[in-house]
Length: 102
Image (cartoon, rainbow, N blue to C red; front, side):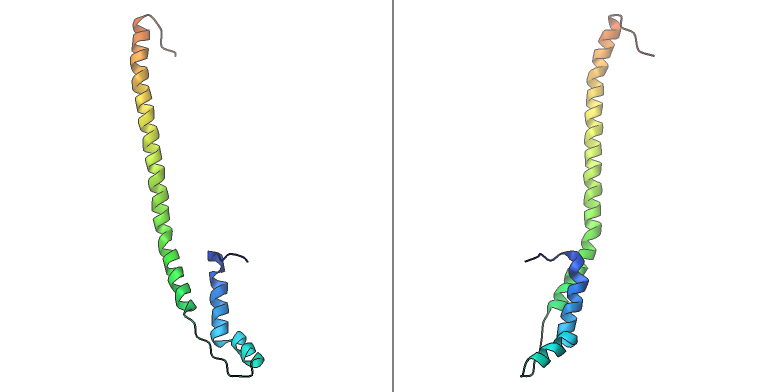
């Protein structure tokens, strides 16, 4: 059994439409001796899923941008703290006669 994926949505929508009122319904009517009627709400489910999928794209982009921004701020703050600690150490070394690299 295989799983369903988002890229299968158009193929599934087409298959459901074909079974509701298309070639697949005609085949089912031909194969069955009694009249065949089909009714499904899957087309509405697929439309709702497509709508949710189109809306969630920008949300994921904002979340990725926010995560990247927070990571950059944390790295800058860590660098600032490290530089602040090193500044006192370098000042002490210069006071003892060390020279600055050129």
